[in-house]
Length: 231
Ligand SMILES: C[S@@+](CC[C@H](N)C(=O)[O-])C[C@H]1O[C@@H](n2cnc3c(N)ncnc32)[C@H](O)[C@@H]1O
Image (cartoon, rainbow, N blue to C red; front, side, top):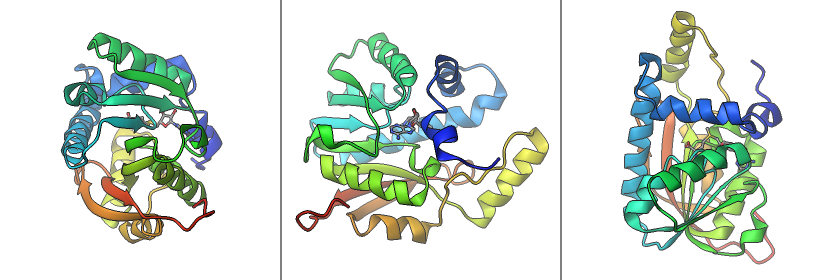
């Protein structure tokens, strides 16, 4: 597959069937093929819970909220949440997820992560950005990171990290099970740091499930930016 951000990220999730399929991948207890997704989702939640515990917060922006994977965590913490995503279809499932657990300190907003200007400077104590950056090309990723740094006092952001082990794992998986062996917008750890460091202090990073997933989550504190710098 030739990766195309517009087609494979921005528009890809904008229909109800895809949103339902995405959600089922990590909530349905049926099917061994979804087992890795369920394991990774459980570990992601645990990591986010741990990192949120290190950030004193009352308000959070979950961008992209997807189908509401983090609802239970925010409900446990009593966080006031804005669940935002470019896909109204994904947010519809997220809304049902929050309603299902009876948590109402949440509002839903369709928005583009590359333009968060409407939220205002430091509108949130923390912004969580899970599983988006590995599907976004570097230049746009920088814009999105700048927006997150602008709207929140802390950020928790995941990247997809490429290395020899994971390139081989993907190739073996694709030849055994079929499906895609696409490298999406993965980058090396050094590249991820180089993108983050102009805007953030990196407080810590956590590998989610190193044998199963390329995902690394960073806990970030925005650096003060020179006046007029939109980075
Ligand atoms: C892989 S899902 C991750 C969702 C959620 N964070 C999770 O971990 O389940 C990627 C999400 O990014 C959203 N998305 C894609 N491009 C976006 C953009 N430019 N602004 C906001 N959300 C976007 C998609 O609609 C989709 O819900």
